[in-house]
Image (cartoon, rainbow, N blue to C red):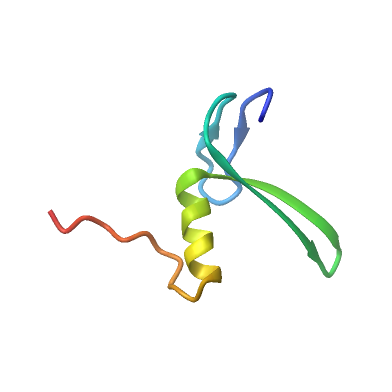
Length: 61
């Protein structure tokens, strides 16, 4: 849970206390990397890692 407003690393959307968000914790070549993503960008990342194109499907209407 975040205690103050943070911003999505990918799109810049505000993540306020009480919001649902994604936390990314990885080890990269330069050391540990921790980032917060909004719910939508977290969904895109999950699809990309699973082999999708990393873009949300849009409603054709």
